[in-house]
Length: 125
Image (tube, rainbow, N blue to C red; front, top):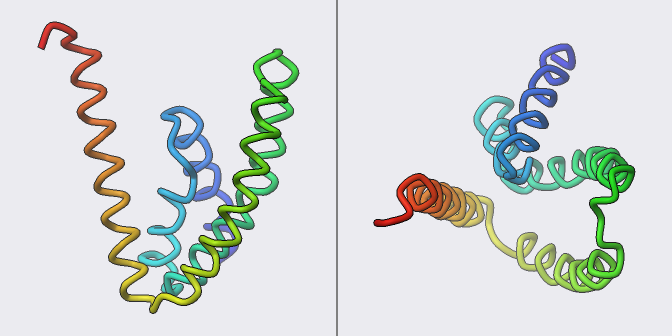
């Protein structure tokens, strides 16, 4: 099974980087639908996957001078506080409700991207 997971990780990583969407937006449904993980396990696994990909991406962008470290540090501090609250909320929520909410977030993100893309393609509308 792990031989299949590596190419899926490559595809998700490439898609995420190319289109600017979070890997979890793609990885969580793959883990739930393709591998039968429950929502909590899929989200937890996706969060672990982010660690090495975030480090490699940050280093690559830093090398090109594309990281605002001051801004990143402030956002990271806020993110750490938010992740504690968000993790507690997710773990206190049953898997079916969490899956439904996640699905709604995916739909909202897709709709927002579609509207933005249409506005950029047709700026006079």
